[in-house]
Image (cartoon, rainbow, N blue to C red; front, side, top):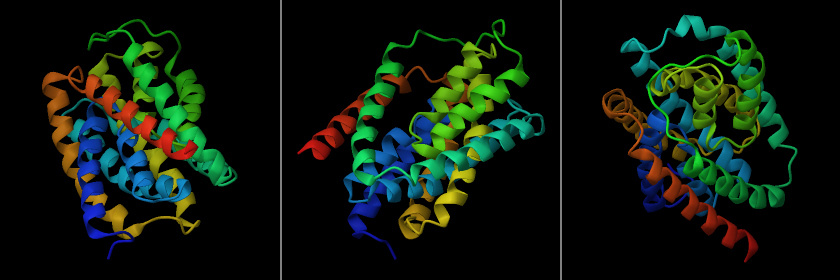
Length: 253
């Protein structure tokens, strides 16, 4: 049923639940699931492919939850979602060209950088502010860049989209988080379409993790609409830093 021992699969399901909860609020669920997959023995490409499978369920669940609550109109985002899906697929194609040994070094370094970014970013609120660039320009520049990163690597994508919406499009944090989910879902599915043909996806583990993702994302979206992301940030920084250091030690040992 699973590609790994059952007890390890159960731990990955728990990791996926935590990731879905965190990602639906603040983004960055891949900071939990990608290192967790690597730590149970997945190769870098297997970890990325399986992460896209289970992550698509989580981002899709959060997207629908925010839409049902009226925080985002999905039809208005369709064009940006198409851009995100195409860029995510392009990033996944690039990931196949990078040797596994290089990815093993890059992954923990990027994780540490993302954790530092989360730790040092200024306090944000749900208040809207003046947009620095028009939304069409945002969709043509920021969206493909972040989505391509998602296809190539992934962890932190939701937070990068959210920060882009806040700092450049002028959205408040809750509105930015809600609008992030459709773009993240699109980049996940676009890159997953590429990874499917690689044969690297752990389908049994990935679908089991998807159950945890859906449950965590549904709960996290409800929490976000009530209290916001301020309690998640310290946990996200701690977990991503700890796992990145563990992976870096493993890669250099």
